[in-house]
Length: 224
Image 1: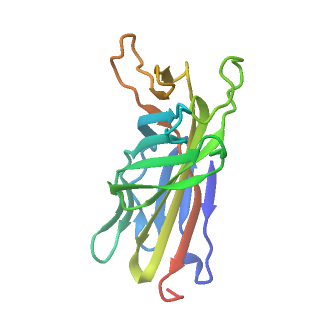
Image 2: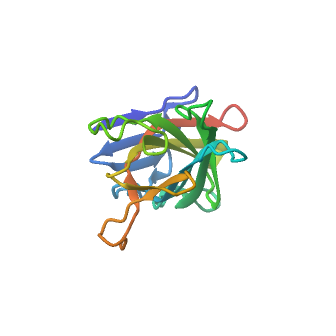
Image 3: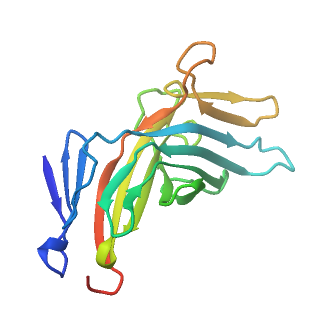
Protein backbone atom coordinates (compact mmCIF):
# COMPACT_ATOMS: atom_id res chain seq x y z
CA UNK A 1 0.00 0.00 0.00
CA UNK A 2 1.25 3.47 -0.89
CA UNK A 3 -0.16 6.70 0.48
CA UNK A 4 0.23 9.82 -1.65
CA UNK A 5 -0.15 13.10 0.19
CA UNK A 6 -0.17 16.46 -1.52
CA UNK A 7 1.05 19.21 0.80
CA UNK A 8 0.41 22.80 -0.22
CA UNK A 9 1.37 26.24 1.09
CA UNK A 10 -1.95 26.37 2.90
CA UNK A 11 -2.78 24.18 5.89
CA UNK A 12 -2.43 20.41 5.90
CA UNK A 13 -6.22 20.24 5.84
CA UNK A 14 -6.06 21.35 2.22
CA UNK A 15 -4.20 18.19 1.14
CA UNK A 16 -5.68 15.35 -0.88
CA UNK A 17 -4.72 11.82 0.11
CA UNK A 18 -4.88 9.00 -2.36
CA UNK A 19 -4.66 5.44 -1.09
CA UNK A 20 -3.91 2.64 -3.50
CA UNK A 21 -4.24 -1.03 -2.60
CA UNK A 22 -4.69 -3.68 -5.25
CA UNK A 23 -5.72 -1.05 -7.80
CA UNK A 24 -8.28 0.41 -5.43
CA UNK A 25 -8.48 4.17 -5.21
CA UNK A 26 -10.01 6.24 -2.44
CA UNK A 27 -9.92 10.00 -2.84
CA UNK A 28 -10.50 12.11 0.24
CA UNK A 29 -11.36 15.77 -0.11
CA UNK A 30 -10.54 17.66 3.11
CA UNK A 31 -13.63 18.62 5.06
CA UNK A 32 -15.88 16.63 2.75
CA UNK A 33 -15.14 13.01 3.61
CA UNK A 34 -13.99 10.18 1.35
CA UNK A 35 -15.15 9.99 -2.22
CA UNK A 36 -17.13 6.98 -3.35
CA UNK A 37 -14.25 5.31 -5.19
CA UNK A 38 -13.56 2.13 -3.26
CA UNK A 39 -14.04 -0.16 -6.27
CA UNK A 40 -11.01 -1.14 -8.38
CA UNK A 41 -10.43 1.01 -11.43
CA UNK A 42 -11.57 -0.70 -14.61
CA UNK A 43 -8.95 -0.75 -17.39
CA UNK A 44 -9.17 1.56 -20.35
CA UNK A 45 -10.21 -0.12 -23.59
CA UNK A 46 -8.86 0.30 -27.11
CA UNK A 47 -11.99 -0.38 -29.15
CA UNK A 48 -10.51 0.56 -32.53
CA UNK A 49 -6.95 0.58 -33.81
CA UNK A 50 -5.85 0.73 -37.43
CA UNK A 51 -2.59 1.49 -39.15
CA UNK A 52 -1.80 2.27 -42.76
CA UNK A 53 1.34 2.63 -44.84
CA UNK A 54 1.74 3.83 -48.44
CA UNK A 55 2.58 1.98 -51.62
CA UNK A 56 5.43 4.24 -52.68
CA UNK A 57 4.10 4.47 -56.22
CA UNK A 58 4.32 7.75 -58.16
CA UNK A 59 1.53 10.22 -57.30
CA UNK A 60 0.80 8.41 -54.02
CA UNK A 61 0.90 10.13 -50.64
CA UNK A 62 3.91 9.30 -48.43
CA UNK A 63 2.17 9.22 -45.06
CA UNK A 64 1.74 6.35 -42.63
CA UNK A 65 -0.80 6.63 -39.82
CA UNK A 66 -2.14 5.13 -36.62
CA UNK A 67 -5.81 5.61 -35.73
CA UNK A 68 -7.07 4.63 -32.27
CA UNK A 69 -10.22 4.96 -30.19
CA UNK A 70 -9.86 4.65 -26.41
CA UNK A 71 -12.53 4.53 -23.71
CA UNK A 72 -12.31 5.15 -19.98
CA UNK A 73 -15.30 3.33 -18.41
CA UNK A 74 -14.75 4.68 -14.89
CA UNK A 75 -16.99 7.03 -12.96
CA UNK A 76 -14.76 8.74 -10.39
CA UNK A 77 -16.31 10.87 -7.68
CA UNK A 78 -14.31 13.46 -5.75
CA UNK A 79 -17.19 14.12 -3.37
CA UNK A 80 -19.83 16.84 -2.97
CA UNK A 81 -19.26 20.55 -3.46
CA UNK A 82 -21.47 23.47 -2.47
CA UNK A 83 -23.31 22.98 -5.77
CA UNK A 84 -23.26 19.39 -7.06
CA UNK A 85 -21.10 16.30 -6.79
CA UNK A 86 -17.68 16.67 -8.43
CA UNK A 87 -17.08 13.77 -10.80
CA UNK A 88 -14.88 12.55 -13.60
CA UNK A 89 -17.33 10.69 -15.89
CA UNK A 90 -16.50 7.97 -18.43
CA UNK A 91 -15.02 9.24 -21.69
CA UNK A 92 -14.21 8.16 -25.25
CA UNK A 93 -11.80 9.87 -27.66
CA UNK A 94 -10.17 9.33 -31.04
CA UNK A 95 -6.41 9.63 -31.55
CA UNK A 96 -4.57 10.02 -34.88
CA UNK A 97 -0.90 10.34 -35.68
CA UNK A 98 0.63 10.68 -39.15
CA UNK A 99 4.21 10.81 -40.30
CA UNK A 100 6.20 10.85 -43.53
CA UNK A 101 7.13 7.21 -44.02
CA UNK A 102 10.40 7.91 -45.85
CA UNK A 103 11.83 10.75 -43.75
CA UNK A 104 10.33 10.47 -40.26
CA UNK A 105 9.81 8.04 -37.41
CA UNK A 106 6.82 8.55 -35.10
CA UNK A 107 8.55 7.27 -31.98
CA UNK A 108 8.13 9.60 -28.99
CA UNK A 109 5.70 11.79 -30.90
CA UNK A 110 2.83 12.92 -28.64
CA UNK A 111 -0.48 13.97 -30.16
CA UNK A 112 -3.70 15.18 -28.51
CA UNK A 113 -6.83 13.06 -28.75
CA UNK A 114 -10.25 14.59 -29.28
CA UNK A 115 -13.87 13.66 -28.80
CA UNK A 116 -17.18 15.10 -27.71
CA UNK A 117 -17.49 12.48 -24.96
CA UNK A 118 -14.63 13.76 -22.82
CA UNK A 119 -14.13 16.62 -20.38
CA UNK A 120 -10.45 15.80 -19.83
CA UNK A 121 -7.25 16.05 -21.91
CA UNK A 122 -6.17 12.82 -23.62
CA UNK A 123 -2.91 12.24 -25.51
CA UNK A 124 -1.28 9.35 -27.36
CA UNK A 125 2.44 8.66 -27.76
CA UNK A 126 4.08 6.10 -30.07
CA UNK A 127 6.94 4.09 -28.55
CA UNK A 128 9.28 1.47 -29.96
CA UNK A 129 8.14 -2.07 -29.26
CA UNK A 130 9.82 -4.18 -26.60
CA UNK A 131 8.40 -7.31 -28.26
CA UNK A 132 11.46 -8.56 -30.16
CA UNK A 133 11.03 -12.32 -29.77
CA UNK A 134 10.04 -12.92 -33.41
CA UNK A 135 12.68 -12.36 -36.10
CA UNK A 136 9.99 -12.04 -38.77
CA UNK A 137 8.28 -9.20 -36.90
CA UNK A 138 10.88 -6.62 -35.79
CA UNK A 139 9.79 -3.34 -34.17
CA UNK A 140 7.75 -1.29 -36.63
CA UNK A 141 5.44 1.71 -36.12
CA UNK A 142 2.68 -0.02 -38.12
CA UNK A 143 3.17 -3.73 -37.30
CA UNK A 144 4.87 -4.00 -33.90
CA UNK A 145 4.80 -0.96 -31.59
CA UNK A 146 3.71 0.42 -28.24
CA UNK A 147 1.21 3.15 -27.50
CA UNK A 148 1.16 5.21 -24.32
CA UNK A 149 -2.01 7.04 -23.39
CA UNK A 150 -2.33 9.84 -20.87
CA UNK A 151 -5.48 11.35 -19.38
CA UNK A 152 -5.53 14.58 -17.37
CA UNK A 153 -8.76 15.43 -15.57
CA UNK A 154 -9.42 18.48 -13.40
CA UNK A 155 -12.37 19.87 -11.45
CA UNK A 156 -13.05 22.94 -9.31
CA UNK A 157 -13.82 22.10 -5.69
CA UNK A 158 -14.96 24.31 -2.80
CA UNK A 159 -12.96 27.43 -1.91
CA UNK A 160 -11.48 27.65 -5.41
CA UNK A 161 -9.32 24.53 -5.21
CA UNK A 162 -8.64 22.96 -8.61
CA UNK A 163 -7.93 19.24 -8.25
CA UNK A 164 -6.06 17.59 -11.12
CA UNK A 165 -5.45 13.87 -11.56
CA UNK A 166 -3.23 12.44 -14.31
CA UNK A 167 -3.47 8.80 -15.35
CA UNK A 168 -1.22 6.93 -17.81
CA UNK A 169 -1.12 3.47 -19.33
CA UNK A 170 0.44 1.71 -22.31
CA UNK A 171 0.07 -1.41 -24.39
CA UNK A 172 1.91 -3.43 -27.05
CA UNK A 173 0.31 -3.89 -30.46
CA UNK A 174 1.84 -6.49 -32.69
CA UNK A 175 0.91 -8.64 -35.68
CA UNK A 176 0.12 -12.13 -34.47
CA UNK A 177 -0.51 -10.94 -30.92
CA UNK A 178 -3.48 -8.63 -31.30
CA UNK A 179 -3.18 -7.23 -34.83
CA UNK A 180 -4.02 -8.58 -38.28
CA UNK A 181 -1.92 -7.26 -41.16
CA UNK A 182 -2.60 -7.23 -44.88
CA UNK A 183 -1.05 -5.71 -48.01
CA UNK A 184 -3.06 -5.13 -51.17
CA UNK A 185 -1.98 -5.54 -54.74
CA UNK A 186 -1.37 -1.80 -54.95
CA UNK A 187 1.29 -2.04 -52.24
CA UNK A 188 -0.77 -0.26 -49.58
CA UNK A 189 -0.57 -2.11 -46.25
CA UNK A 190 -2.81 -1.88 -43.20
CA UNK A 191 -3.44 -3.51 -39.86
CA UNK A 192 -6.32 -3.68 -37.41
CA UNK A 193 -7.31 -5.27 -34.12
CA UNK A 194 -7.42 -9.03 -34.29
CA UNK A 195 -10.64 -10.88 -33.48
CA UNK A 196 -10.38 -13.08 -30.41
CA UNK A 197 -12.26 -15.92 -32.10
CA UNK A 198 -11.52 -17.71 -35.40
CA UNK A 199 -13.61 -16.41 -38.25
CA UNK A 200 -13.46 -12.78 -37.22
CA UNK A 201 -16.24 -12.85 -34.63
CA UNK A 202 -16.13 -11.59 -31.06
CA UNK A 203 -14.69 -8.70 -29.13
CA UNK A 204 -11.60 -7.06 -30.62
CA UNK A 205 -10.89 -4.58 -27.82
CA UNK A 206 -7.55 -4.44 -25.98
CA UNK A 207 -7.39 -3.54 -22.28
CA UNK A 208 -4.90 -0.90 -21.12
CA UNK A 209 -4.09 -0.90 -17.40
CA UNK A 210 -3.75 2.68 -16.20
CA UNK A 211 -2.27 4.14 -13.04
CA UNK A 212 -2.36 7.49 -11.32
CA UNK A 213 0.97 9.19 -12.05
CA UNK A 214 0.40 12.74 -10.84
CA UNK A 215 -1.87 14.72 -8.51
CA UNK A 216 -2.07 18.49 -8.19
CA UNK A 217 -4.05 20.93 -6.06
CA UNK A 218 -3.93 24.61 -7.00
CA UNK A 219 -5.98 27.63 -6.04
CA UNK A 220 -7.75 29.85 -8.56
CA UNK A 221 -6.94 33.01 -6.60
CA UNK A 222 -3.56 31.94 -5.26
CA UNK A 223 -4.83 30.97 -1.80
CA UNK A 224 -7.78 28.96 -0.63
